[in-house]
Length: 184
Image 1 (spheres, rainbow, N blue to C red):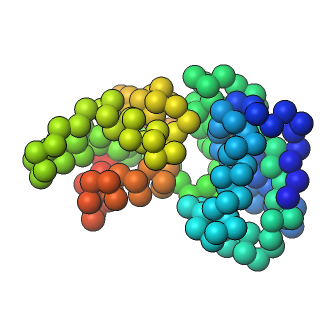
Image 2: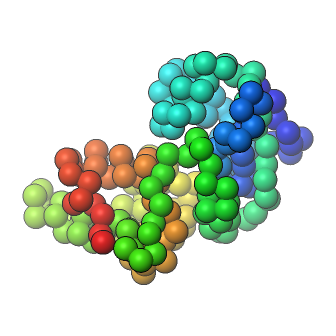
């Protein structure tokens, strides 16, 4: 493993790149570059990284094949939007995400999920409660980022859909069919 940035506690968009297969990359964002690298490595070493493609690559080539580098320094309020720009620009191989089709407007139906949850359980959750849960789960670096993603999906301006978010929603709300989450 190689880290290409001396400033490790850094809010940035970052890249994980394979030395053996340089066209295979992962794009992410963080408010603490060093901490996020360690989270990735912990999951990879344990064999349970949420990107199955990155995990498979790690299992074959090992830790020494991966290069971690910051791509763009940002503030915590804009880093997720910057990440989305890089996800669209590079379509990274290791990111397991479902793209939003602007014509089909593929997006998460957050209000429908919460309404269905209330009907099933009687437990009322607000969009803010959901944003806090997504942040506590580690899906987003801040409450503001999570809330921003929710609002972008509600307004139809979302540019991507992360598989980790889908898995969390399906697990948290006991949803078996992804069509219950997606609004088309």
